[in-house]
Every structure is written in structure tokens, then in C-alpha cells.
Image 1 (cartoon, rainbow, N blue to C red):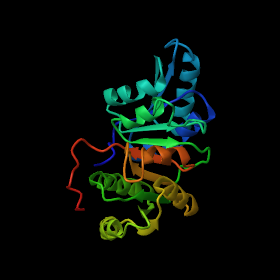
Image 2: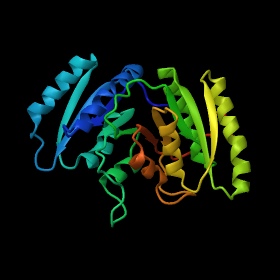
Image 3: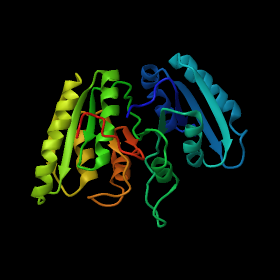
Image 4: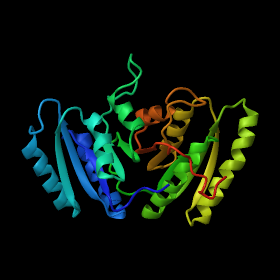
Length: 270
């Protein structure tokens, strides 16, 4: 699996500080991917409100970045439109700035943000911090024994080549599950070897913990990581929606990738 180049990067915008941060942090990736930036705004009541503001934002983004920039103005909920538009346009990536108040659980068990991430047709980068991270020196990838886990290795190598970044492989396992640990560690070493053979500097770390999201985010924050790449999972060994929890907690941008309908084994990792 690879992130699709020569396509578009879709950025939902609401003119908040966080969405403007997301736009600027997309410039480098758009250049690497040879992609057009599409700014998408949606208003519950009208597809013409904020038209002038959206046109001005697209023009200033084009001038600042030197990239091709277009915009879409729609009526409705922006999160409900995002996946549909990304699929229609064949977007290679969605980048969204999330306000720190956004949470993924409510009394109904979900919300528009979690649903749009779960059904995205391409990888999504969520950005919560206002820190400038146009550069990327270290990429974190968490590996487990699920069949989907290997799918993120290709995009991680692709991103590492773009940025000339190193990759940090993290494996989290329950402290008292020796069987799982013994099965996991050889696989992690195989992933590390595969990444290094691709010409990417790579290290690995094993973390005994019953709290997968917390362990991943803590390690990323304490080890100068600039991006977390994860498979989006609705459930798993460590509880419900651990991937959503990572997005909730992380001040570092997170790329979430939905598993393909048919897991490919042609990665060189078995």
C-alpha cells in the first residue's frame, strides 16, 4: 500500500486557528506528493456563506505555498461531506485540524468525527497542536500481530523517504502475556530489518503495558517523534477504539489508515 501521489489533498476548513495550522503543515507533503490542495468548507445552512472568505483563503494559500489550490463550499456537516468528496475526487490524503475539545465518545458511542475517520477512503492526518511541524525527522509506527498491521509499513517508508526521516518501531504488549510477547518480538525485528533494507534508519522499542494508546503517545512525546502512523481499528486487544484514543491524546500529528478490504501480503513481511 502506498499514499497516492499526483492527486489531491483535501483539507476541511472552518477558519479556526487549528484549521489554518493544518493547511500550512500540508505544504511540504503536497510538494512531495505533487498534489493539489483542496480547501473544503461546509455550513449547516448555506453553500454560499463565507464564500468571499474561502476565496481569499485559497488565494493566500496559493501565494504562500506556490502550490495549486482550489476550494469547495458546501451546505451541511463538514465531516459528513469529507469522505464522500475525497472518494469522488480520488484524493490521496485528508488533513484535518482538530480542536482540542473534540472527543470521540458520547452517550451514543460515537460522533461525526469518529465516523468520518472510520470510513475515510484514504489516509487521514489529524493535527491538534499549533506547533509548526513542516519538517519530520522521526516517524513512529506501532506494530502488533494483526494482519492489518503490516499495511502501514509501505506508507511509513514512503513518508520517511520524502522527509529523509528515521523510523521508530514500537511494540506494546500486556506485561503478563509471555506468549504474545514471544510471538510479537520476532515480527517486530522482521519489520525493522525490512525498513532498514529499504535504506531507512530504524530502531525498535518494546513496551510492556496494558494501556496501548497511552504507551504509544507517551513514547512519541518523549522521543522527539514528529508523526505517528497507525492503522485505524474499531476494537482490539486493548479495548474499544484504541486508534481513536491515540488521536484524542496526541499533540503530535497522527496519520490513521483504514485497513484495505483485502489485506495484501506482498510487502516482503510475512
